[in-house]
Image (cartoon, rainbow over all chains, first blue to last red; front, side):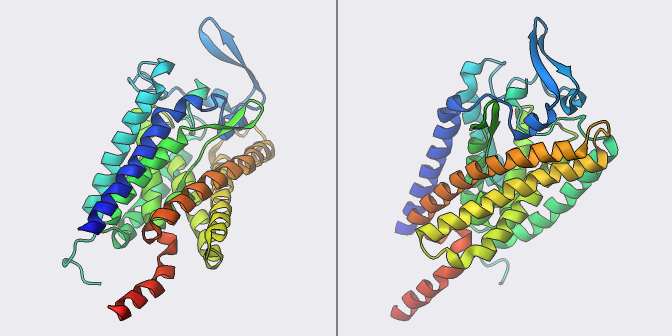
Length: 117
Length: 231
C-alpha cells in the first residue's frame, strides 16, 4: 500500500504543478505572436483600427479564416475575452484535458489478467 | 487576435490538403491508439492523463525568442520520453483537440495538419533522437542533454511539417523559400526553449520517480533483477 500512496502523492504533485503553470504563470506569458504566426504575418503590418486589428500589406495570415468557434465562451484562453481570466481559463483547460486524456487512457489500458503478455 | 492563437488557422491550406492531412492524422492516431495499449496499465494511465494536462499548461506559457516574437512548448518529445511515443502522440493530440474545440485555437479544418505536425511528426522525431541518445542518459547531465536534443529536434522537425503542407496546399502567391527560412529559423530558437523546459521537467521527474520515466525503463531492469535475487 505504501507504493500506492507514493504514486498518488506524485500524481497530485504533478497535477498541482500543471495547475500553477496554467493558473498563475500563464499571466506572465509573452503576448507576442508565436513562431508560426510570425512566419505567416511576414509582409504585413498589424494596425489597430476602430474595428479591431487589421493586416496591411501582403502576407499568408490574410488567408486565415476566423475560427468557427470564435464566439465560444473560452475562446482565446479567457472567459468572454476578459484577459484577467486567463488563469481560470487555464485551470479549466487543465481539468478538461486531464479528464479527457485520463479517461481515454484508462479505457485503453491493459487490464491485469485479461491479456497475457 | 493573433496573440492568443498558437496553432494553424483555417484557410492557410486549401481544402484538399486539409482533408489529406486529416486523413494522415486519423490513420496515425488509430495506429498510436492500438500501440498505446501495451504501454498503458493501472499505474501509467493516470500519469499519461497528467502528462497531457502538463503539456496543455506549458503550451500556454509563451516565452520570448526575438523582439516581438514568442514561442511555446509543443511537448511531443517530453510526452514520449515520459510515457512512450504512442501514448505521447495521443497526449499532444488530445491537447490540440481541447485547444481547438474549447479555446478556439487552431482551426477545425486545420486540426489534422496541426496533429500531423506536432503530435505525429514532432513526437516521432523527438523520440527517435531520444532513443538514439539513450545510452548517454546514465546520469543527470546525460539525461538533460538527451532531453534537450530530442526536444529541439521535435520542434524543428514539426515546423518542417508546416513547410511540407504549405508546399502542397498553401497559397502559391507566397514564396515557399521565404516561409521556410523564417519559420524554420524561428523554430530553431523556440527549440532551444523547448529543449530547456523539457530537460528541466524530465530531470525533475527522473529525480523523484525514475521508475515512471518510459525512456529509462530498460535501464532499471538491472536493478529489478538484483532486488529479485536478494528477495
